[in-house]
Structures are given as structure tokens and as C-alpha cells.
Image (tube, rainbow, N blue to C red; front, side, top):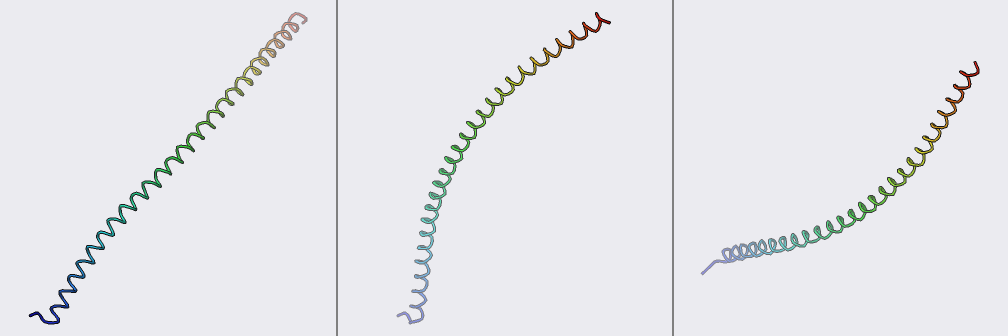
Length: 100
């Protein structure tokens, strides 16, 4: 027959083993749930970033188009002013040389 202290130590070892197994199972299940939660939140984060990147691209395209229009408008004005200034300078030089 087993003594009282041997019985208590056997029960203690069995309890420790069951507790350890239960803890491992709980940790594995919690780990799986954590991974799924992280995967879901990272997917949402990527979707948000893709939306923001799309908006940024659209805004950048609009800015580029407006810049091109601005350069085209101011560039033609500059060419016209330069041409007019050249004509006036030529005419003044012609008058100065002919008159003097």
C-alpha cells in the first residue's frame, strides 16, 4: 500500500502535468488567435495605405497638370514679350543708325 505522502506527491505530479498541458494548449490557441488578429489588422492597414497612396497619386497628377498649364501659359507670354522687346530694340537701333 502506498503511504499518504506518496499519494500526495503523485497527485501533485499529475496536477502539474495536467496544468502544464492545459497551459500549452491555451498558449497555442491564444497564439493562433493573436496571429489571426494581427493578420486581419495588418490587412486593414494595407488597404488604408493603398487608398491613401491612390489619393496621393491623384493629387500629384492634378498638381503636375496644373504646373504644365502654368508653364505653358507663362512660357508663351515670355516668348511673346521677348519677341516684342527684340522688335522694339531693332527698330530703335535702326532709327538711331539711320537718323544719326
